[in-house]
Image (cartoon, rainbow, N blue to C red; front, side):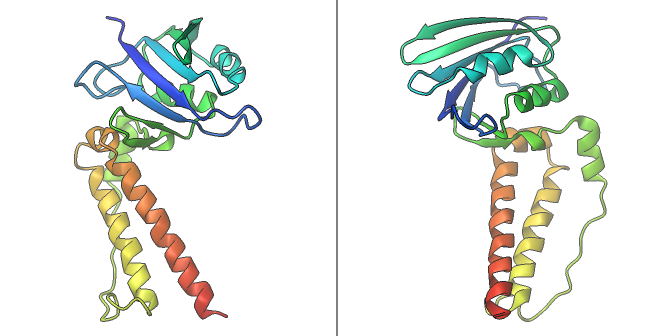
Length: 201
């Protein structure tokens, strides 16, 4: 298989917090969807020099499926060229990122991808086949002073997320649409919780 060089730019790496998640910008010279339509066997990771990145090489070397690691410097970055034993499928890529304690990565267009949302085809099918949720219509869904308003916002976002599994999920993932809706859903649930707390005082 032709080696695909993929560049990862790590920003804001914390020395003290091994499990913190730095921003990772993924660059790849292909129109194909990474890990789904094309599986790289080589990655290049760039880490800003002003951040203490001594933990990165150790975590890379301990990661499963890593064949070799070359380290160097370029401009304001440390870089690590990582060769893998096997091509990075979705499953292997997900495990690699988790070994580096990453919770999310970013595309060159600054589209966020949550690592947990990198699903295999079987997982996508499972989510796709889940029965749709229902919401009992209410005249209060437009009233921000009523719980139905917040319940409907949550229901609407969950329904939109559910629809992505049937609409070219890998494309939706790398377009940032999945993470965008997940963030909106998290905020909607937080708004609902805050509303409940205010009204229980």
